[in-house]
Amino acid sequence: MGPWLVGVAFWVFLAAAAVAGIVADYKKRKLEMEPLRAAIERGQQLDPALIEKLMAREPHGSKPLSPVDLRVGGIITIAAAIGVGLLALVSRPLGLVPTLYGMPLSGIAAGIALVALCVGIGLLLAAARITHDRAS
Image (tube, rainbow, N blue to C red; front, side, top):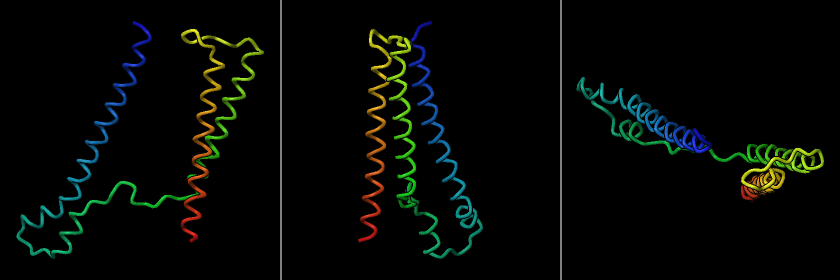
């Protein structure tokens, strides 16, 4: 066994999650079509507007973006970035600096904190932009 097993497990999980989503979507669509199929089998007259409504697919994400949700996500992400950044700063003086492929983990943690900080700021900017666009 080796460290590569973690990578394999990750990709297997990702594939299983994707396949599960596809199967769930298929079953949901099949259940949505069941009343239409049953009505056709019984020979009932169907209104074309009803058929159109049943056949129309709702796009995933038909719910509009909420600036509040983006702000909450941004605040949580920035808080996580601050926590990881503090961990990076504190781990070096305490002597808790293991290495990963020759690079100190405090340096990796600082990089992760910087990326998370940028993501959080981006979420807050997106929330502000949506609020501004909806106001005008």
